[in-house]
Length: 328
Ligand code: SAM
Ligand code: DTB
Ligand code: SF4
Image 1 (cartoon, rainbow, N blue to C red):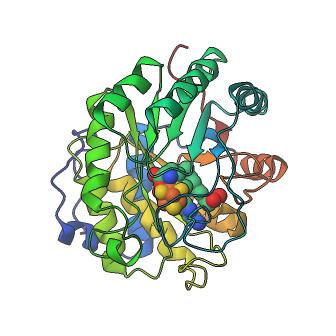
Image 2 (image 1 turned 120 degrees about the vertical axis):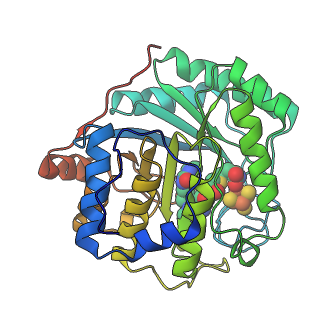
């Protein structure tokens, strides 16, 4: 892999082999970072970072058994189940996020899949957030093709649905839905013309081969996700993953770099896990090509760095929020 970086402006590839991706992961760190940073700056301004704020619009009581999740009813995590928030409260939170500098508002629900009647309220939320001039994203679990079309008609910009891990390791993490179910939802979202936000979680006791498998699965999608969240597991007491051995930060940075190289035009999101990450590790992630974050004091049910510390980090690194690219 000492060959020159292939045409920096060629079309993104969906034909990466697992061996090629494994080779990228195994590169000496300086070469990997140089390659990722070069590709990053050939497609993006490396000083700009897109900022989204998350809100849990329906928390807990979820029938799925995702082994990392605070919201699964299978585990005793102390998260109380709540009903779907009312539209006006969601819009008040969105306005506050916009005023604090977020350009996208992401609404998450602890559902296996939305019921059609729940979708009425979610569509109203999407319309309301859009009217505030923000991009909209929701993550509601599995979606049918007609449900995806309804969300598109309401003006939804992004749907988040993660593959979570490699196809092989998946059965160690979740038993209540299959990898194929997830791929089907992604196809419905893509088919409706909604941008896809799809990534995974690392630090769940997976092997290096599994991290290769996750990136391979994402980079093999016929069209790369426009947004690729790479989450460092937030350990939740009471879940099967509550005591997982944390991933070495350098391996986390490598995962970001390989996502950047294999999906050059996607936004790579440095997602969950920043609360316990040093400024230095986050700086390496931005050098490795991460160009979006979640901003605001909470993710869904767990803390995120407070706005002041993120502002200080951006100041130290000379980073600025990415302006909205679409006209709203
Ligand atoms: N219930 C819906 C679903 O699973 O598709 C939407 C919400 S779910 C919480 C969204 C994503 O958050 C999950 O797919 C997972 O990748 C991520 N996530 C959940 N808990 C996490 C944790 N403890 N650490 C890191 N990422 C987590
Ligand atoms: C994603 O990939 N990460 C976000 C968002 N998409 C929905 C969620 C992270 C959740 C972290 C654990 C929690 O706060 O419950
Ligand atoms: Fe439910 Fe989503 Fe949590 Fe899985 S990740 S338990 S589907 S809320």
